[in-house]
Length: 222
Image 1 (cartoon, helix red, strand yellow):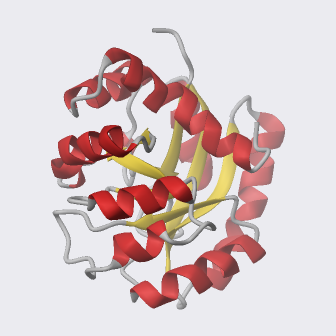
Image 2: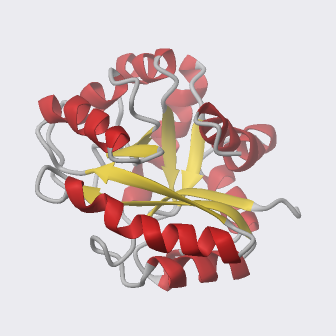
Image 3: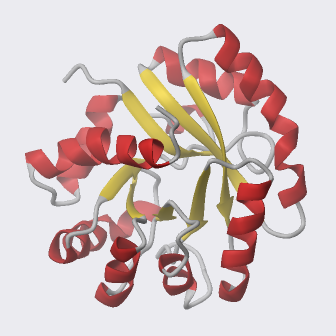
């Protein structure tokens, strides 16, 4: 395949990533990405500081042929805090809002997937682990994507997520949750990860092409 890669879940030095936004964008560009969202971890401690990387994003977008988008990943917060944090993130300029879902590899608070699925301000439930059918339906009703993760540990729930999403008719996106340079993947690798999760060839292509574009189009980002 020769499509450009879209990845809507990445981290920079602003939270626990290893590289600056500029290096992250450069490495993504060389790998054939057209669009990336820098979605650093936030809670009430640091959410007001997300605007500090906007200048770097503006500089990148002015000089390189890649669309870099300011986002957040609301992470390990009480479920009741997800909606107000998502609203605040939007007010501060975040265009993509990811919620750190109930991955099998971390002790995420039970009820996080449910709270995220009920929140229309959320775009993606990241690595939602063993998400319930009920919450997948709620996410669908609120136009929230479920994530197929390329990241070690978080990927353990990919098969379940793909199966539940197909069952209820919700859509999935393939993201890397990049923290280090080696976490980035090519379009073909992302497509194969979608196939490995159990998606059909048609579903896998949608997961890496059409569905990420849908998230961007919701906010007039492409």
